[in-house]
Image (cartoon, rainbow, N blue to C red; front, top):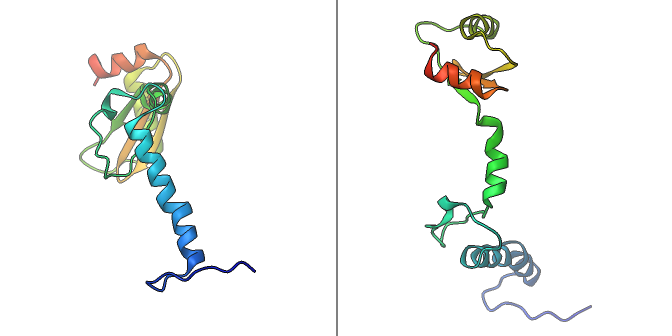
Amino acid sequence: MENQQSDPHGYDPIAMELYETFFVEPCQVLRTCLQKPDGDLSDDDEDLDLDCPTICLTKELKRRIRLPSKLAVIIKPFGRSFGFNFIYVELQQLWKSTSKMEVIDLGKGYFVSRFSNFDDHSNVLHAGP
């Protein structure tokens, strides 16, 4: 068995090694990422606080993450609460979408409608109720 020196503060050497491996080293890697990023970082990553843990994302990865919500509209009906089926049927009739329209109940009276066609999304935002 290997002879391990005890820490002067009384910390378990195995626990300290685990702490170094899982907490200190990743933080150093993260700081290196922030100081010398590999790849093309997104524009909103330029003014990062190095004391705050941050995950570096490339522009392409952010674009892929944001893609599903690009053609989405968040809806909050006022007056009273409405059920999902009622909202879905009313939106289909009101907006007359020419392509697939997905409606998701977010809870607390909020819904999100996601379009598969840019023209339908634009029509709802600019011309429809």
